Length: 257
Length: 349
Figure 1 (cartoon, helix red, strand yellow):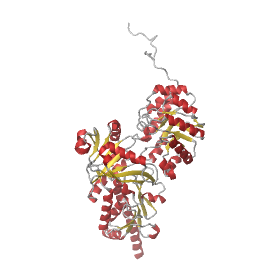
Figure 2 (cartoon, each protein chain N blue to C red; figure 1 turned 30 degrees about the vertical axis):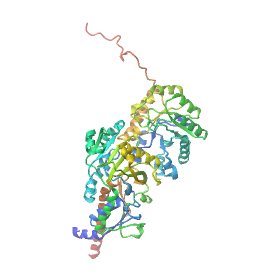
Figure 3 (cartoon, chains in turn yellow, orange; figure 1 turned 90 degrees about the vertical axis):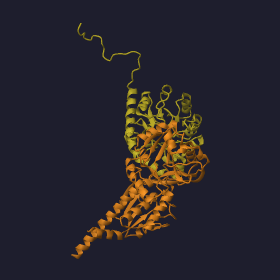
Figure 4 (cartoon, rainbow over the protein chains, first blue to last red; figure 1 turned 120 degrees about the horizontal axis):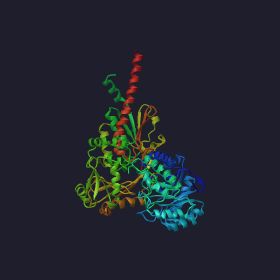
C-alpha cells in the first residue's frame, strides 16, 4: 500500500489526541505497529511553536507525521493551518478537515473540495476527511486528491460503519485510489469490517485513546486490521439462503436398519 | 546516635524551598514538621502572582480523577483530603457530582467503569443534593468522599501557618543555588524548573471565574461531554470557578474566544442561570507535567530535590509529594550528620 508514493506496511494510522499522557500515547503507538501518526495543529499552539514540547515527543517516535487541520471551519482557516503544518513538520502531507456542523463534526464538503484544490495546486498531498458520498469523492479526486478518507461514522462516536453500502460503492468506484476509513470506529470488529470491504487502511484515535487500556486496545485494533485485510485477500464466501453441510452426507455409513 | 542528639542536629539544618505554589508551601510545612529549619523563596511579587496554583480548580477528587489517570494519582491523592482538612479550615468535604445530558449518558457509564467510590443517583437524589439542579438530569454519579477548596484562600492560609512557625516567604527573589552552598534545596518551581528537568512540558489550561446571584451549588459538578468536558467548583458567595481546557501547547496567551465560548455554553447547559452570571475573570496558565503526566520527587546532585509534574492535580497531590520529599531530605541530613559524627569520633579517638 502506498500513499502518494510512500510505501507503508502497516494499515493502521493512529491519532495522537486524548491519551491519558504522552507516555501512554507512545506505548500505544508502539503496540499498534502504526507507521503514520496524525497530529492536530491548532493555531494557538502553532503561533510561536507553543506546541513544540508535545510535537517533539511525537517526532521522537520516528514515525511519519500526518498533520491535520482539525477544528478548522473555513477554507481559509484550513489552508492557513496546512501551511503552518508544512513548516512545522516539514511534510507535504496534510489531512484536510473542514468542519461544518458542530454537533456531528460533519465535514463541509463544499469547503473541503475547494480547500483540497487550493492545497493540491500549492504542492500539498492532501488526505481529505470526507463522507462516503460518491460524487464528493469524485470531486476530490478531480481536485487532486490521491487518497480518500471517508468517515465510518461521526468523529469519536464509536458507532462503526454507518453506511456499509455507501462505503462498498465507493470502493468499487475507486479501485485505484487508496481508501482509508477515518473516524467513528469504536471496537476492533468495526475496523476488521472496513478492511473486509477492501479498504486500504483505517485511521483511529478516540477508540484507542479513551479505552480503559489504550495500549491493549491499540494492539487489538492492529490484529483486527490484519485479520480483515487477510480475509479480504482470501476472497470470503458469499452468504447463502440455505444450509450446506461442511461434511458431505452422501455415502455415509448406514447404522442399524 | 541517640534520638535526641539526632533531632538537635536536624533542627539546626536548613532547607530552602524554591517556589511558593502549593507544592512548595506544602513541602515547607512538612519539612518544618520534621524539625528542619526552612525558608521559602519565590520569584513572584506576592503569593500566587507567579504560580499556576492560583488558577487551580481546587478539587480534591481522587476517584473522579481516577477515571482518566493512573491509579497512583488516586492512591496518593486519597490521603490529601485528610491533610487539607486538618490544615485548612476551608476544606469542604461534601462530595462531587458527575452529570451528563441524556444524549451523553454513555459518557457517564464509561466514566463509572473506570473508577470506584461512587453511587449512581437518580433525578430525585440529584435534586436533594443540589436543589438548583432538580429536574435537569436523570442520572448522575455521586462521589460522597471527595472534597474541594478555594486555592486562593488555601494558599494564604498555608502561608500564614508557615509564618506562625517562623517560616518566612521571601518574594521577588530569583534564586541562585550557588549562593546557598550550605543548604539543602527543595525545588518546587513548576514549569520554570525545565532549565534542569528537560522532560518537563507545559499543558495549557483556560478557566473562568463568574458570580451568579441565582444559583447555589454545594459541591463541584462535572459535566461529561464528548468534546467539552467541564467542571464547576463553587467558591462561596455565588462565585464559581469554571474550568478547564487541556491543550498540548505552551502558549501563555490569554484564553481564546473559542475555549471561552465552549466553556460558557457548557456551563449554561448545566444551568441556564449561568447566562446571567457576571464574568469576574478569564485566565490561562500552564500545568507542569512529565511525559507520563505523573508527579515525581527527584534528587539531582547531593543537595537538591525536585518536586514537580503535579500536572492537573496540584492540590490533590501536593500533600503526598510534600511528605515524600520531606522524608527524603531528613534522611539525607541523617546520613550526612551520621557521617560527620563518625568522622568527628574517629578524629577524637
